[in-house]
Amino acid sequence: MTEQRTDKTGAPVSITLDQARAISAYTVSVDEALAGRADFVDPPQTAGERVFFHTEVDEEFGGRGLAGLLIREALADSISRNLTVVPVCPLFASHLKKHGDEYKAEGGQFRRPRPADLALVKETVQNAGDA
Image (cartoon, rainbow, N blue to C red; front, side):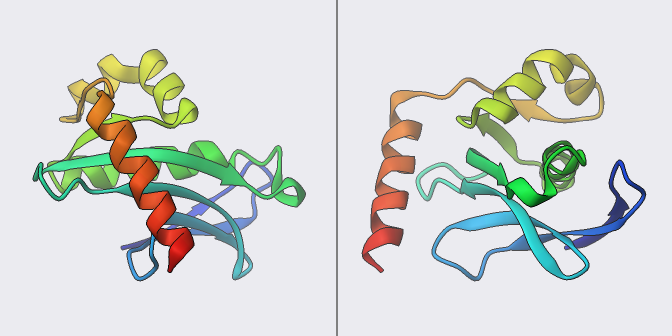
C-alpha cells in the first residue's frame, strides 16, 4: 500500500505500509526521505486487530501536518482491511477521542487498550531491540 498526498506546504508526500522490518509501520516520506512513522503490531492471538503504539515525525519535517496524514491513512487502511484499531499511541488515542464517531461512521472499529496489549507492545519492542 502506497498513497500519495500533499502536506500543509503543498509538497508531495508518500505514505507506505512497511511490514518488512522487525516492527511494522506506516511510513511517511517527503522527496523520498523518510520523515516519520506510525509503529504497530498485529496481535498473533487476536486476528483482526492492529495495536498502534508509537508515532513520530522527524523535527526537520515538523509543522507540516505529516503526523495527521499518517494517522488518517493508517486508519483508512485499517477500515479497508476490516481491522479493529487499538490506540496505545497518544496521538492515535487523541485523534480517535476527537474523531471517533466519524471514524465509526466510515466503517472503522476501535477499542480501548487492555493490559495484554501493553504487554504485547513491550515484548515486541524488546524483541526488535534484541534482533
